[in-house]
Image (cartoon, rainbow over all chains, first blue to last red; front, side, top):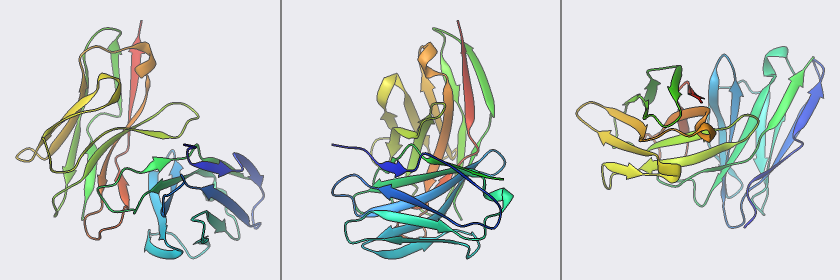
Length: 114
Length: 115
């Protein structure tokens, strides 16, 4: 079974631009969560999608948004990029997203904002 | 609110000696607890999970953890460290305020294994 895939793996943008990251979950998984990893703040929860609906949201500004498609693939978008948005963005999938379920992580997208 | 505290930001051991990575948690609910490992430039891999079954949980690569409710701890151990164990380790609690899979991560412990 293929694992969680994320594209692109690396991205360089400039301040003010916007970016879209993509995540393909493991086949059969309906929940997709997104996390931001930075050296200063560690790993922080962005949002979770289940059956095309945002079910939970972390404490991030509205510039961070996401969506999920009917095939469970998910995208996250960051508008008006700031230097502080430079981070590793990780996507995780699980069967139902319930708190007992194991979440499988992708390799991440490394975003650099110049 | 749920939270986890990893008591050591950096642990250094010699190859072949025991590993102990310490984690305390805070949760208003019966917690689901996990340990994940992250090797450089790699994603996170689940080592083990506790979900209210046996308090001693065995994971992959010889790791295990014991859930101690009275001490609110979930320490990760391994009897004998291997060079390949060098990585970042995260203690994680699942947010119990909803039934969704929001994970709350500790700050991580870097494990260094010396030859």
